[in-house]
Image (cartoon, rainbow, N blue to C red; front, side):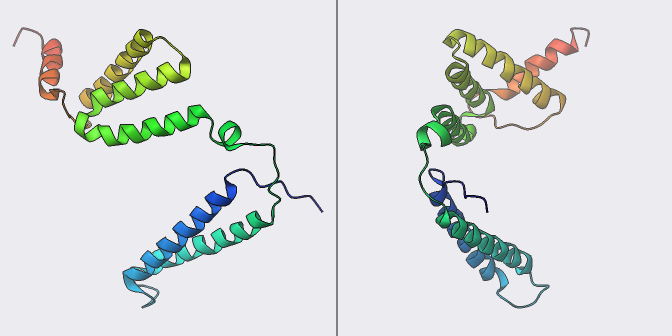
Length: 171
C-alpha cells in the first residue's frame, strides 16, 4: 500500500470552500423547479450540482485523512508573491475596465505587471505596454470591429483619425 501524500497548506480550506460552494449551488438549483420532473428546467442543474456536492464531500473525506505535516508554506509554495500580485491586478483590471475603458486600463495593467514580473524600468515597461495595447486595439477594434469599453478615451475621434490616415486625401 502506498503512503498518502501529506495535506498541502490551504488544501483543507480550499476543499471546504468547494464543498460549501457546491452545497449552495445545489440549494440554488433546487430552487429553480425542485423535484418536479426529469424534464423540468432545474433537472440538469440539480443533478450537476448534486454530483459536485457528492464529489466535494468525497474529496473532503480524503483530505481529512491525509497527514498535515509538510515542509511547504502557503507564501513560498502555494501562493508566491508574483501569483498574488497577478491575481490582484486581474481584479483591479476587472473593476477599472468599465469606468476607465479598455485603453487606459489595459495600459496600466500591462505596465504594472511587466514592471513587476520582468523587472523592466518604468519607461521600458510603459513603451512595451503602449505598443502592445495599440496593436491589440488596432487588430480587434479596427480590423475585427470588436466593441471595447470606451471609458475616458475619445474612441470615436481616434477611429476617425485612423480611418483618415488610410483613406488618403483623394476623396
